[in-house]
Image: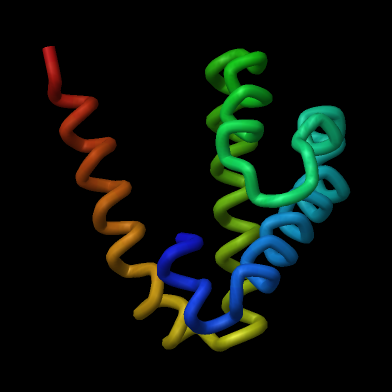
Length: 106
């Protein structure tokens, strides 16, 4: 997502959107507050990954879904639904095809 969005909103814009998404996830879902607070500032995905592996699978999945949904909704309010869908279409398509192949593997 960072690669797709940086040309449009800049690297600082992507980081700000990510941080805001983390904040809103914690505010909307109190069970995520401690997880959100553990994620360091900046968009360092390895740091996010290290926080997620500490969670059980259900909590990590819930957190990821809420974070992505919130990020998408914030971006939509910033640049509109049509541009958001066009920019992230390749990201979602790639992500969905990766998940599908993992689910079908023996």
